[in-house]
Length: 85
Image (cartoon, one colour):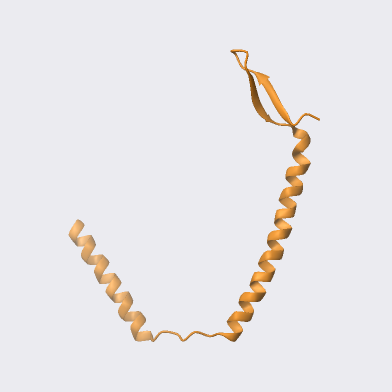
């Protein structure tokens, strides 16, 4: 089984064209292993995150602070747009 496909270029040099089609099974197997491993990893991470969400609840910001912050960002962006126009 030849791993690399080679050919001669117009100057007679041996150049690499690609990988042999006989290795396609290895690429498919590697992709399958990656998908299974990734699914297992996500499953364990989600269990851990769910457990953390149930045990720790951060205090939510007050509604007035959120509105004040959004208003300040909006007016600041309007000022900068008027300045650059």
